[in-house]
Amino acid sequence: MTAATVDRAASGARGDQPPVPDGAITITVKIMRFNPEVDSEPRWESFGVPALPTDRVLNLLHYIKWYLDGTLTFRRSCAHGICGSDAMQVNGVNRLACKVLVKDLMAGGGKHTTITVAPIKGLPVHKDLLVDMEPFMEAFRAVKPFLITYGNEPTRERVQSAADRERFDDTTKCILCACCTTSCPVFWNEGSYFGPAAIVNAHRFIFDSRDEGAQERLDILNDAEGVWRCRTTFNCTDACPRGIQVTKAIQEVKRALLFRR
Amino acid sequence: MALALDKPRSPRRPAARRGNFEMISWVFMRVSGLALVVLVLGHLLIMNILDGGVHRINFAFVAGRWSSPFWQVWDLLMLWLAEIHGGNGLRTVINDYARKDSTRFWLKIMLYVSMVLILFLGTYVIFTFDATIPTTH
Image (cartoon, rainbow over all chains, first blue to last red; front, side, top):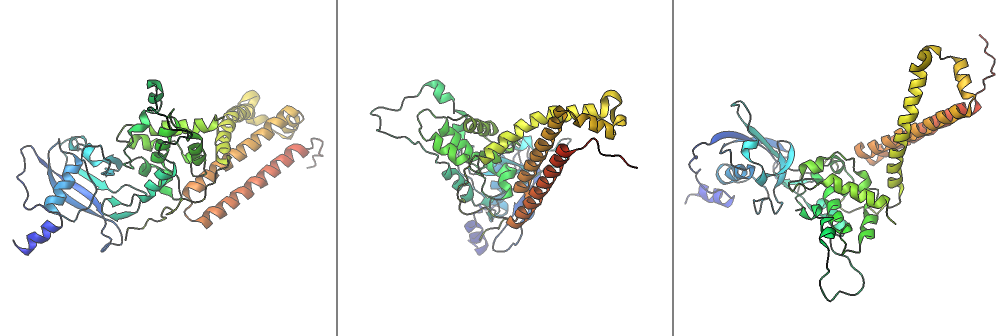
């Protein structure tokens, strides 16, 4: 084994490029890259990648990392839209790379296709597409996203009617990918706006009939940095890979605040 | 080391500011907006369209309107609601867009001073308007 192949293996590369499958076309993947040890500013880098229309954007990133440039850094885990690791800006909108198909991004009329990929906005970039999720998680923790009850534990399960469960069904779908929060212009701005995801997760407990911490959470979200900073631009609803009606959930929290007691 | 943001988010959540002010201002924007639709459209209709429109407006016309408490209250409401509605809207714009705390502070001071001046001047005129003022030319 030569020194060069050892280096490539250490950086995550998998060796020679695999044969190009039938029906593949070469598309350009333009990635916003940032290496903290070299760059002072992010820079764009383009790769030519053979892709099938049925490929996902994540496949293109894998191809680049495994065969073209092993230093490309991004998060992904399950690769099936469940874990929420690979949120990124694909062609300018926040999406999970594992849920966007190449065929939906193809340029029409036989023109050459270029797909741009950039890190989600408003969070500090560690490297390439890898961002620091801590500010996002901090806002999530601040709304107390766990069951709060008082008094004695029941001896049996906490029974809930189907209708009561339905009340917050939409917001149970959140996978904390940060697509919504990092699409929100108020979150980009600065300061400490909780962001859509934190409010969605507060909503999930505020409207849970088994939970007794609703007033506490409503107080938290009545903050100057709380739900009243929402400008209803619907970026969050548009970005959510789970199809959660995020803006609606925020408005429901506003309404609960208005008409409480 | 990470790519620093232009204005990084605070590493710690600031002390809670949990009065009902933001909620009240949010409700005010909706209520005053509805009222202003009626007040402003009515005002525009009277001033610009009905009965000769803008061409009949002169000192006597204004004096005639303001001799009625109804139009005094109408104009006073319109002045206060529009000024506070617009001012509060600009306050949120400043909150959203100002990047430095000092910029935000001074922009807001300018905004509040201009609001107070305009509200004072407008209210003063409506209440002290004297239709019998001698018109010397």
